[in-house]
Image 1: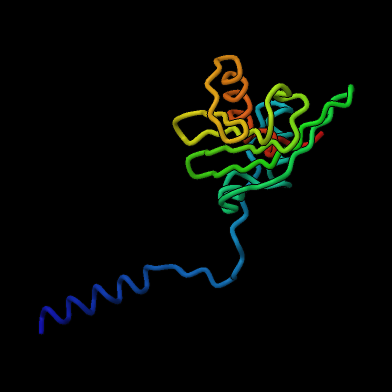
Image 2: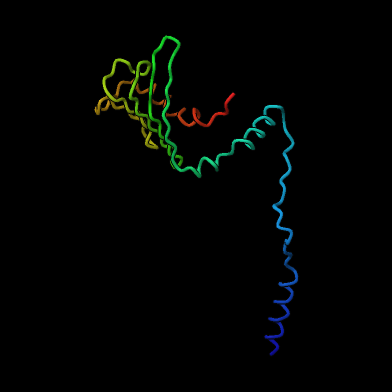
Length: 149
């Protein structure tokens, strides 16, 4: 009996000590104190367009990218980016400025550990070409996540 009374007393204490928010309002987060104008600009932009979690929620991103230089050279590529592991892939259907000397479909990738280049289904290991692949795949994320002017 004594144990039951202690249990009831503890239960009542816990029940009444818990506060419950019944106004159904989400708590408001105040703006941080900005270190400079750039800090404020980035904060305001991320409030408008989203943050890294919104990108993660998309899982994989696929888009077609067409780039034409002033002299008329065009690259057209289907880009894929997988956030888990930061994997990157590009399939160049047209490559007037990126490896114009190569024939057929050009594929570049980063598998989480290694960068690779394939032209018309054959792997290429040329050091100069691989430097360009490392740059392209390493910056793929930034091309579609950067804020627009």
